[in-house]
Image 1: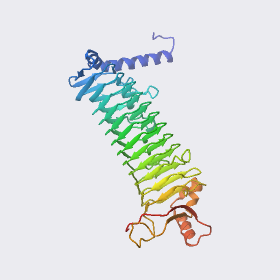
Image 2: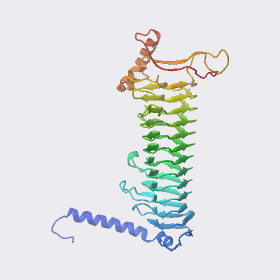
Image 3: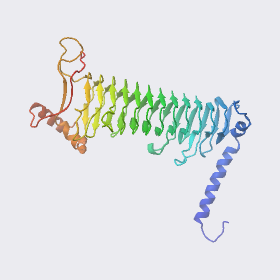
Image 4: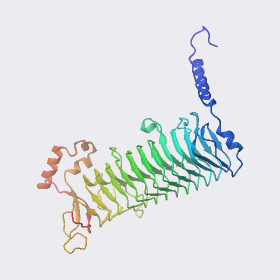
Length: 414
């Protein structure tokens, strides 16, 4: 077909694709296939392949246990998902899954659990993949103790470390995700995420239209946003630690269009904004923030929207550059503030009951400039704005705005 009639771009392109496919197949040709061993294992049996590297992709379509013992690698050959599970009551443990395809549309993953119930995924290492573990219409699955590392790529071009879509009653526990894009939960209710560590990504976790999920005891660090709860009601966040979320538009905890979140006992450190929240979608659907620690952030809590409607009690606000921020023209007065520990409280506790004798009142002076004019944030903490703020507090030339009042601030000896 190569002749002197001239260069044929289309023919050359097809030839290049065919050559690439042949090279990939050749690279895989020297590896034994895992699929043959899977096919030879009876339903309900246990497959323990001899140690080594095997060619993939592979599909499990019957109940069985695949146990790699930490010594078996399945190489996907850069095509599709490395291992797919399409049956109930399948266990995959001790495997090294690597070299998935690279298409976002196909959600090429290290491990795909599809239309399955009762799967167990434990102690696997998944790397050099676009997506890590994808649960697609999978329920009552345990994903525990896996290590997932993403490919080197621009942050937005990576895949999710763990993705749940239309999957319910799953337990995601003790996994370590590093260098991935997000942990995404979409249209998936009643799942538990416990003691996972997510680092060096975009969203530590994001929930979209996913009510009643519980997120407990997780560590999220060095991401652009910590945990985002979007249009997901009755989500519980308890005992998590979110730190070093310093993107200019990011937040440690973010809530939008959601109702009745329980946010208890979390620690949010070194973030641009510790908590960012809009007003609940209906008046009686308040978020509850209790017994949390918000420390060393640029802003402790930031509210946007016309009304507050949150319950904020018994939290500790410590060494934040700004305790509370609001978007113009809203305020935080409509929230229920009570019993919080404010490190800039200047009152006393004469009777020793642990409650300040006078309310904690937060007014804003020159701070209002950058809240009403976001472009002015560039000059925040500049000498000129600091001087203007000092003069405004010393001899106000306008009435300072009351942002919030806590009638019973916690008092501790500073």
